[in-house]
Image 1 (cartoon, rainbow, N blue to C red):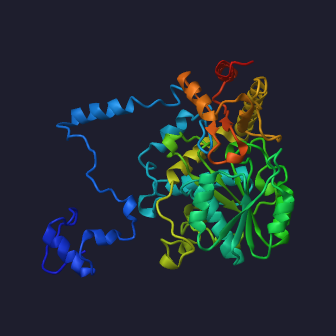
Image 2: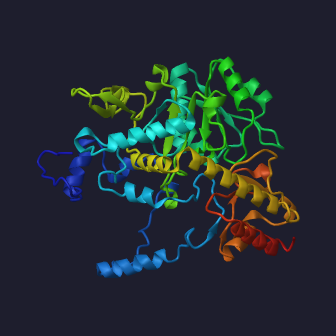
Image 3: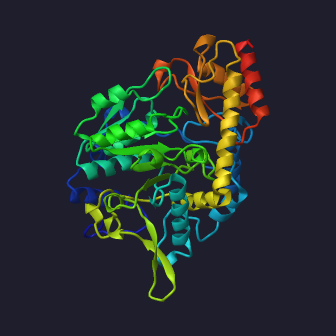
Length: 468
């Protein structure tokens, strides 16, 4: 901002009192606090920050920070059975090698003037994810599964002109809150109840809540709790009878052994790429994808970039570029675009493409089979512990499963505390987000685990619970 009579530096905040006052007068305010009148008083910090004295050198700063970091324990040091949306899979070395190359190492999708193969890499990623989910159009990745699901809902709302989205009551509460925040005030998100024993969606409740105002029905398969929704085709049919869009969220690591949602009627498929060659990165390895059929009604509702292949002005040559670029907020439409899209996670799209190229169809099948076998063994062994039910929901599961500790007389929090002392990260405590389940925990088993790892967990639980 430029204020008449005052010079300013483009990189240094204008903190001189006279300059501040001139700027405030320009916008009709008296104090800096007037900028934050909407913040409740109880949320304002009215004391100085409790900061340590300034360190005198870079070396001292490095030693200080490394001392803090040594307090952390990573999954490299602990045996980890915690998933819940960010999973520990094996990351082939080639994934890190390629995504650290200078021409790729950025979160942005790239532009023609600095492309160096990024457009082609993302086109290849899109093609392989499309093959995995058996759809035709896949976007350049967005932030995470939650945003991909919310964007899918908004796409359905725009396509149908309706205001309601039906979702499972048994859903990740964090993902649900993101969707509600992202869709408000255009869409109302309404939960559908489930069968207590299996976790499957209650079709009678779904039918009651479906109406001519339903824009979409959204389910996850596998669910956040790991069980497979076995009524996918029936759910999709009921949704379409009311003219609603059928959206399915999916863990892509399951698709080597589980039918893709397109095979039971999904119109939009979304999910997270993190299982495909991406480290957990303290939660920073998330990357959302969306996939649809190659139909204009869907393509024109994508807010994020799509890369296609087209002939160039030179006969026999082909190039890679944006598809329908003008529909985006950074294209011709600007503020009139469907949605605003900022920084994306295109680097993770390239990484996922490398992973899928490396694994191939047989590799994905082997991955899925390994996870099924190991998680099935873990459930069986959990069932041998007195007072423990290895799988709370009586349905087929993939990678994750809800362990019921209600019969042990101990809380999940106490059990996890004991496990941590034994060098084991237990499952996610569900007692806060899903209190109706009581003392249950969401456990995760992937291809990184061995039978010996699972036996170590079972032995530790037996010791904690004093049972066998």
